Image 1 (cartoon, rainbow, N blue to C red):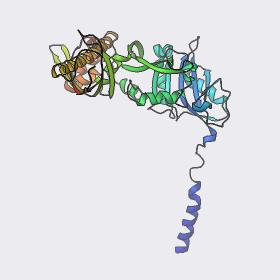
Image 2 (cartoon, rainbow, N blue to C red):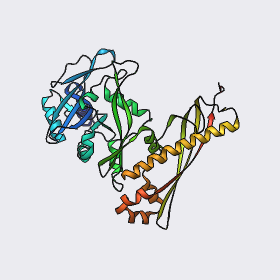
Image 3 (cartoon, rainbow, N blue to C red):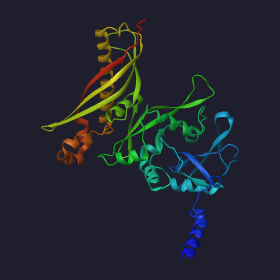
Image 4 (tube, rainbow, N blue to C red):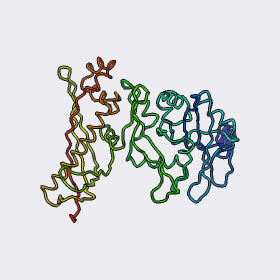
Length: 383
């Protein structure tokens, strides 16, 4: 019996390294997709562009249409573009051209043209949710730029434009929207969605280079784009939803010459909803810390009276930013501030009755912001 057991164990040890080799993905057999762009042709058919990572020393596969250069001048990616009856059909056409298998699991960003986002966002999200290789944490963007152009721009620091966009979002200075976020937003009434908007601009220090810039957010209701919000008001969405880290705001204090630059961080939000005789009110109590980074006014931060004035002016600026953004979202009927969830926690029965006609309730919610900023560091100079 001992000899039989020893024989079985020996056979198992030799067979162990062979397990799983049949379904393995070898790197030299894969075309690694780093970014996906979805646009529309003139006849309203989906136009898909795939940014395929090209390792140094590797040749191109699949007949690329364009190339981009990464750090050091080596080709790091190429763009393959095809149109089709659907997004899946266009991707399949690209896959047939490739000598390697198109591999979507490394995809980092999905860029949607404004034309596609206007009326057919549902089609894009449906494809992403049904395709198993596409990760749910893939970042979403909307743009007015030409799709192959924005995917193919040359990043100075990163190997591909997709990696550059990924690193920019990791700083948490802008709105971050993933496929999973959209899935959660769609559960709310009227399906409010906010997606960051990007554009290309020339680098002011090197006019030969281009960089992507996040200029705000696109607002959606029932998966239809209803408007755009600038980057400043978009930060108000981050504050209200608890996603704000820190940011430096530059503004002119009321009644003063010059400007203040204050780095605001550690924002805390406490929302107090109230429904009284059919009137819906939301009070936002905001608290945070500030670091004075620049002061060209006559206010002396070393003076307690002036210090309190700087705190009040900063708080007032943040309240105005949130209020204006909230009002804009009410005008287009997109509850990207997730106020329905706030009211539902305190008034579940009332919200359940209002869910069917939330489009008429949300624009009439009265918002009041009560901010309080504590200046933690003011510097020693007032010159």
